[in-house]
Image (cartoon, rainbow, N blue to C red; front, side):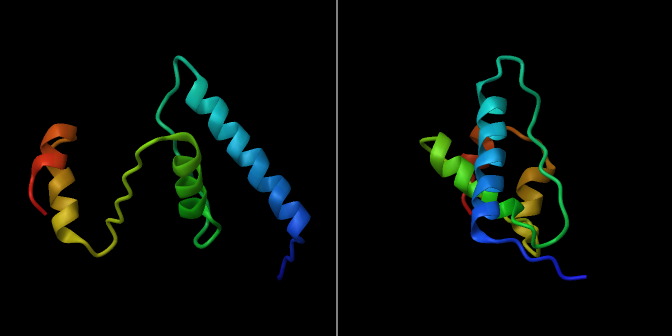
Length: 87
């Protein structure tokens, strides 16, 4: 099945998702943000756009096929250690 979406509908969907993410960011008792979806549906793009629009600094990590990066996060999630360790 092929589904075609025109530009206007795509932009409306983008605005809707970005607004939901902004509301999540503004929430005082927010939980971790989980974004799920099928392959190639725009999850990474959406998160990069959200990060650029709503945060001064953004870090992007792609773990796919990167054993060194996977090992860096496997030990613990200490941000200071993760950032300070040489790549």
